[in-house]
Image (tube, rainbow, N blue to C red):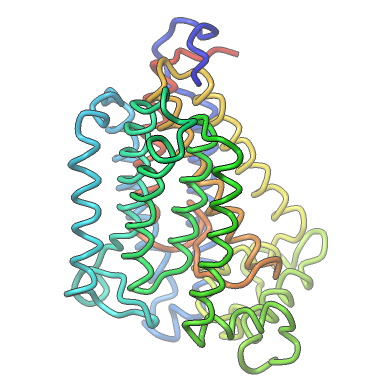
Length: 371
């Protein structure tokens, strides 16, 4: 699974990856301010309310990234079971004493201060799956001994998160798990059977909750419900469409004037398209493409199987989240409530993603990658 024989000696982290992350963070803080200035001034009489907090989270996250980039990633293998157990405990705790926001009991905290345990669970599960799959590499062709244990662990996490409920985070966890299983050497037939079972399960989950059916209806024909179920996606498409090639100019969005709900979170990519046009959206996609490419290179050049799988999981987690967010914003898939990594407003998501990147940087440092 690893390509350790092709690596060169060295001790520097991947500076290309660092540069891309810093560009995304700077762009994200800028866009959070632009997208949220109206709603911030209206709600809090402070146009910088959200952007100030995003900047603080970004600085804290960069500090975590630097710190974690200096810690030998093999440490996480030793502590992976305890980290996974703590993640599951937090997912149970939030169901008992969690704060309900936007119809989902997904937060621990008081008032505006809080953490989202499902964000911690994603990274914790990636660590444990990397450990488990590296240990099971000789059994991955077996359904019961290689495929079922890691999939069972992922399904437990998904089950707890769905009780909140949070479909978006569940989809990210399942997508990341599938990528890791594929890299670990799982049989195609096992993955195909999972897709079949997953399709049936997804249909059942959608049918059990009326609001999820509403999202499906809005996805299929948003224009039929312009003031109801389809309102958000229609406003998103208006924003993207009105931007043209070069956009209306930074800060000149019309949709942020309370037309597009919470434009600084899930639908911030719409504001990017409106203000910076096709040029801006393509630039963002290119930055993410470079990030994913560097993550894949880190996985390929990792010194061992655990490093390969850990880098794969972190990179896959980011990639799946990007694809889901942009798919929703462009009307390509039903709404799931997933933020755009490093750009959307949100402290838990930002700090955990940057923590993952810090671990990824340590793997690249030990791999000693050179151009």
